[in-house]
Image 1 (cartoon, rainbow, N blue to C red):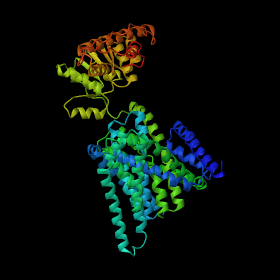
Image 2 (image 1 turned 90 degrees about the vertical axis):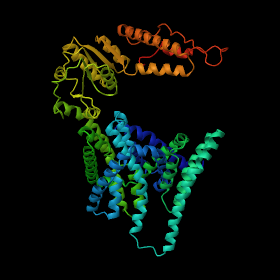
Image 3 (image 1 turned 180 degrees about the vertical axis):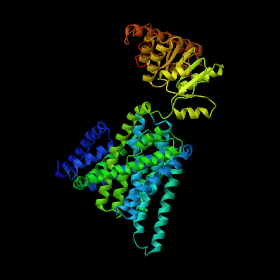
Image 4 (image 1 turned 120 degrees about the horizontal axis):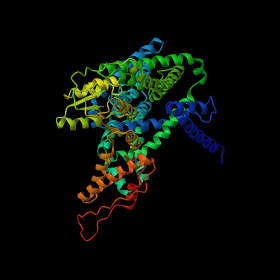
Length: 612
């Protein structure tokens, strides 16, 4: 092997090893993968093992940013933007502008030029999408009210990155004298407009027919090549016209966002994007001057704390102004604290255009990386401290239950509790409903449903709500520990009430039955039975036969559950196999209908402890 080839091989090996080691380690420490890539870049860069030229690495890895913009464009479907428009362009605009102006003011006061302060402020005002979505997903908060608003802000920032990338060259040009050749400037503007028109027309009329032909050919590698051709072709065309490559990729993605081939294109691009983007972040780490960072570590840490505080405060006030609870505002502020991934794109771009000096760019890059470490730590601390804070100093006292006289007490008014209460109210049964979610109570009040505020895990609240006089207590909360606590309190203090409890899973059902709960049901059990039965009907099985089968499966499930309560989780595995469905054929009487697949019978007969 030649020396040059050997060097390339070792460089590739070093990059792959750094990615494999740094990302799991960063996640183990509760940090963003981006922080891991930056640290890996420092380790393999000039300050460490010096395996490759940082400039060459970033030049190649910038294609990862281009592919990322393409995928962002594909996510921004017009229908989605319209449905979330109020939060995207309301909260999103306010967060970016207010935060950007405040941070820019701080940068300007520290000696940055106006152009440098603007770019610094906007870059640091943006939030890390990867970190925010990871935090929201891990806590199950992505579909919550504050989670959807945070996602809307992130979505607006993804839209805003395109004009920000275009703003950098314009600010650099504004520092220079007016061009001496107005005709040349006009021609350049016409070329840019023409490039945009070509991309729009091609995306509207040519790309879908092209992908349709390739899909019919069945050649997956051709689809992958076509996807890369579209992205890089649009990026190259915009670069030739004097505009940003990322803008071209973004337009191409936006035009294909409603395409029937959207998911295929995303799958083909994703692997390339991930690898190249990780190389980009490692390349940024390679360019960092470690001596500068260590020399100014105190200043960098202080600046990172100040910037995260500004971002946290702005988001908190915006959320409170939008009538969100204090808890939601605190969580949202922590989620959106870390600087965004595009800060590592904007700072090198500003440096290459002369807007920032080398020391300024490296200082800002280190600050952005530091905020990515601070954000997840603050979010974790808030989630740990809030429950304790609520218990010691509740934000709101329990309601006055003097008019609560229901025959049934429903605890928890989430999706499950709402359906239970709807059935009872439809029959005219008097119901007392309590919940400790302020936003849920406010939302229900707008629909005329009276819910009392109170913590169902507290004995005094249950007594005030009339638990001593009700006939049935329905425990509909979505937290297993809370449900168990309510059951223990109710069995000890309200023995005359029949306890009906929403179970989290099969093991929870077993625990509840052992406690002597009158009625329990796994939250997904009946919906899964209905789902499976309907699927059999669509496959051609007779409706009555399917109904009998589902009833049989339900009965066997109950028998096995009762045996497991007595003998343990792994008992009942060899129960009688389910009977077969014998449907009436729908179209061809001469062919016998196919019974249930033997594998399906085996699954039904030997279901695991995770079912339901």
